[in-house]
Amino acid sequence: MRSFTRREITRRKLKAPEAPKDFINCSLAQISKAMDEPVSTFHEENLVQVVIDLFLGGTNTTATTQRWALIYMIQHGAVQGEEPLVTPWLTAPCGTIILPLCRGSVLYDPECWETPPQFNPGHFLDKDGNFVANEAFLPFSAGHCVCPGDQLARMELFLMFATLLRTFRFQLPEGSPGLKLEYIFGGTLQPQPQEICAAPRLNSPSPGPREDGL
Image 1 (cartoon, one colour):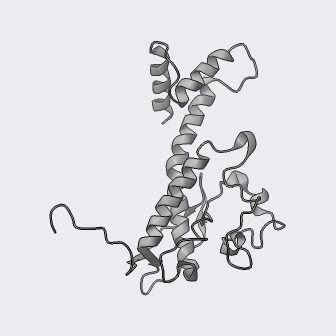
Image 2 (tube, one colour):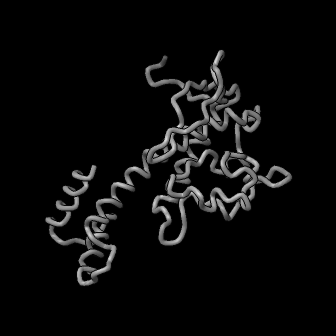
Image 3 (cartoon, one colour):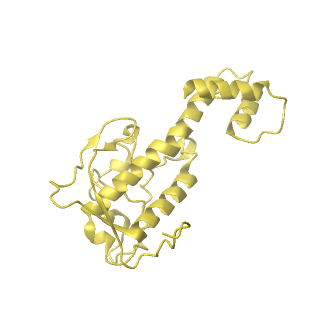
């Protein structure tokens, strides 16, 4: 990925000057402006790393979050209910995975969360079961360190998770020894490989007839 990113940056630099159209072009323009600043963070090495981070942020972290979300829906089976899930559960980003660098931060502060180390749907609900935002919930960081993919990730996770939960109920297969909640340490905290079942909801929308008529 690093080699591919460097080639792409070089390709952009060799092209005729044009109005910046994407992140790499805008960054190269800013690097040119900051060439005389000895402590500037705008340089090619930083650009390469940021582009790689954006790739990883849009693939590995999103997939990991979805996997944890399904596991937590099984662990908290009552949350799935008998009807397709709507609010407030879809408003609370269930199963969000926190990067190891965030450990010890406000996301693990016992003064802000009832059970900081564990996922708890109650963290995002008031006494009447309505969604309530918690200012301590900062999975995408804040300020200068905020994730540039914040809005995209929230929208993408909401659409995928809502679609899955409106269509299926998730459960363990018959004879399963139980959920594996211990994580595998890495760039993100990955769930362990395990089998789960997706049972179609009886009142879920039909996908409609296939084009081949079958």
